[in-house]
Length: 62
View (cartoon, rainbow, N blue to C red):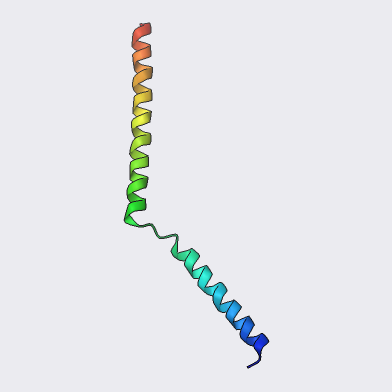
């Protein structure tokens, strides 16, 4: 086997391993899922507080 062919095969193998690593990064672990759940809960609480503030404002006007 020539050195050029060996280099090309090594580069192709490296690229395949890197692509596989990037695909594996799409899987979420339990900590990442928990973080997303916390973010969703905080956003929901913020929206509820905003609605409460608007309701209080309307009640004060009436």
